[in-house]
Length: 137
Ligand SMILES: [Zn+2]
Ligand SMILES: [Zn+2]
Image (cartoon, rainbow, N blue to C red; front, side):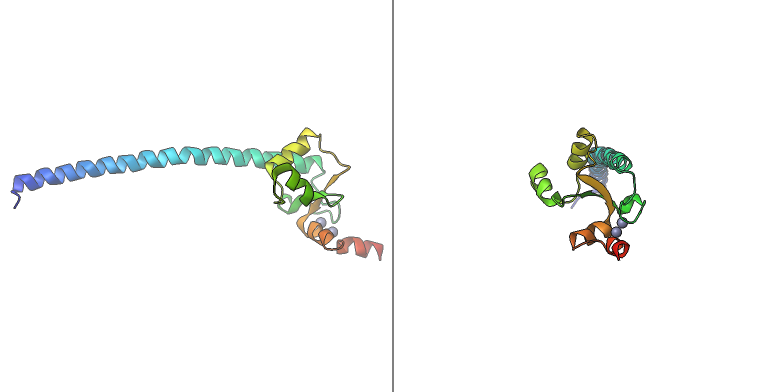
């Protein structure tokens, strides 16, 4: 059985330990926040890069004239996008900072790339955008 004094000492020690634990959580949180902030900066750089790419290509879908940045995507005029993405960064995943940087380094070549919105881009990949068929008809 503990005496009252022993209990008080134990509780004080427990509180002290918990203060330490709270502090260590705080420092853990802070140390985790910094990489988060760095990631945020990375994202900002990425969206800047993407925006300058969109602007360089007219910030407009060449097919339907869509200007909403969220819908716009770089289209490979010769439909070699998947193959090229595999060559650049080992996967056929959609646009990456690497891809945008490559475009910027090449001075935004317009002979091979153009802007399309996702709708027109998908439609083109599946046999041609209806916008173009309507224009022809
Ligand atoms: Zn479009
Ligand atoms: Zn279209």
